[in-house]
Length: 256
Image (tube, rainbow, N blue to C red; front, side, top):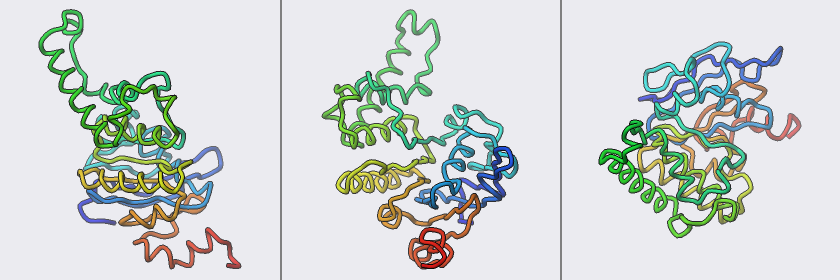
């Protein structure tokens, strides 16, 4: 377990019928770390993500974020505490512009009374102005300012993935869970994604990602947790994981 843990997962079990998709998994993430969760298809990676973010219920174990248990909270309550995720498939509003998509990620912070909305009060206008400034900052951060008025469905796929990161950043995450952020990207786009992930960490955001691109994983991870058939089989630095016999067997087979 890492020092100064921001997220601690202990004895996590998620069971569907007779199948244990996640079986007694333990790991922790320190503040400002980049930790990758890897493993063959069906290893339980996305189910672990779903349990942390409240999209599936655990059967046993604990999930503790910054000293508070998350297991009984709904996804929006977990997001309000600063645990935000992306998905394998882009989850944008295709008919909204880039700017409008990022504004949707600010909905938790646009808390204005009904009277304020009806009468367009000074407080409401101040909240809107503050949020627009933050949206513009995010557009600059993900290098999408030049495309802010473009409808999301008209963007190339690589830029749609960047926009999805922007929407997640609008929720002001302290822990950002990225589910296969490089899926469908070419080499140049993957390099851009790697640099963006590093830049987010430099801004104080802790990162947990599920990823199949081993070049990306080895290039940005502080630590790697490896799952196979729902169980943790290894944890360590990229160098340690790349030489671990159990990991090599899980990916390449017993013979290799």
